[in-house]
Amino acid sequence: MSMHTLKTISITAILILWGINTAFADVTVFAAASLTNALTDIGKAFEAAHNIPVKLSFASSSALAKQVEQGAPADVFASADTKWMDYLDNKGKINHDSRTNLLGNTLVVIAPQGKGFPVTMKKGFNFARAFKGKLCTGVVESVPVGIYAKEALTRLGWWQSIQRRVVGTEDVRAALNLVERGECDAGIVYETDAKQSKKVEVIGRFPADTHAPIVYPFALVTQSGDAKKFLDYLKQEPAAEVFARYGFKLLEQ
Image 1 (spheres, rainbow, N blue to C red):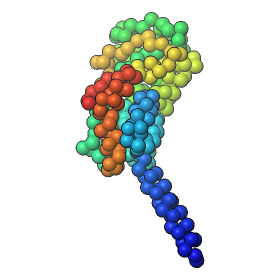
Image 2 (cartoon, rainbow, N blue to C red; image 1 turned 45 degrees about the vertical axis):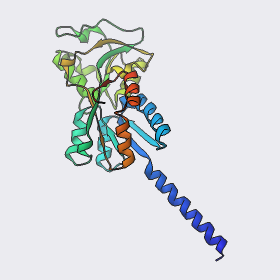
Image 3 (spheres, rainbow, N blue to C red; image 1 turned 90 degrees about the vertical axis):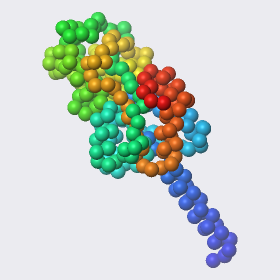
Image 4 (spheres, rainbow, N blue to C red; image 1 turned 180 degrees about the vertical axis):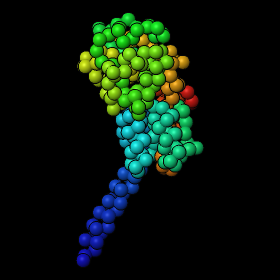
């Protein structure tokens, strides 16, 4: 074998190894669907500032937590409630010391644009009679927005009369989409999601005392230094400004 051939093989091997190492250097983030717009913007800003690629995967917190439990290659996990972060924490799947409750949100009732109806967000109001069709939100047993929604509807005394008309979706964005298309006459989503759509209108905001606080905990899944750098970046001013612009409440900076 000639020196030229050996040199070519060596260079090829180095390039392959470099490519593998580069792939491993990516920061993979599993995040609740309601964080889609904000984290997409923040991920791009982080890449530009640190030259570290960020891969984002969005779905319901419940689905992502199950994937992390099964060994999916996530570096950072961001949940829309503490339940699913606790689930992974109790199984030793996250770095407990890295946990941080970063964001808050507001639970709202929406309707298709131009088809809103009066709602009084108090006990005694007959919510079920206020509209005729279906009510879309996340699956009430597992998806955070659905869990919050059922709790709020129950505390207001509305759940029993409306539960048969509730359509549970895989995540909050799916619920938003169904209301946008008019397949549901009302929906319960986060205010940050409603703000992203010109096809829906907010017709009511649930009082904070009708459900558990909406908290978004973030944590490291791996010990990657780049992942820690990204998590730290989320607490800094550039990221905080993006979160605030999308309507999230900043709990910690």
